[in-house]
Length: 165
Image (cartoon, rainbow, N blue to C red; front, side, top):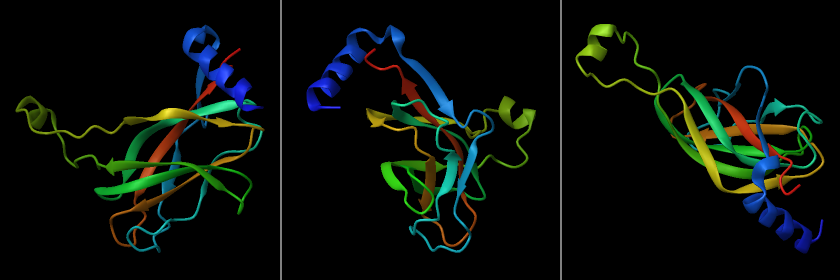
C-alpha cells in the first residue's frame, strides 16, 4: 500500500468509522506474558505467543492492550508486542505498565472501612494504531524492575479491522 492509500485509509477511519470492528486476541483466556524466572531486572524475557498466524484479519491495526492481572509481585515493567514467526519476532510497540498484585486477605470489612483495594484490569491505548499486514503470529515479552522471578501480566491485544473501508 502506498503512502497516499494509507493516508486515505486513516482519513476514512476518522470520518467513516462505522465499519471498524474492534476485537481482542487471544479470543479465549488472556496470555500470561511473564518473565522466565531467570532474567535479571530490566532484561527482556523470551517471547510468548499471543495468537498464531492467520488468527487476525489482514490487514488489522494494533490499538493497545488490556492487562487483566499482574502476577507474583508488585513491579514496574514494559511489554513488547511483536509480530512474526518464532525466533523472528519484530517489536511493534513497547508499552510501560505498573504491575499491581491483588492484596491477599481483602475482606468485606476492609472494603467497608475504605481500605485501599487494587484494581486488577487496565487498558493501555496506543496514541496511534499500528498497521499489521499479512495476518502474522503475534507475541509478547516483558521486562520488569524486580530481580529474577516469574512476575509479569496476563493480557489481550486490542485490534481494529475494516479500517478505512
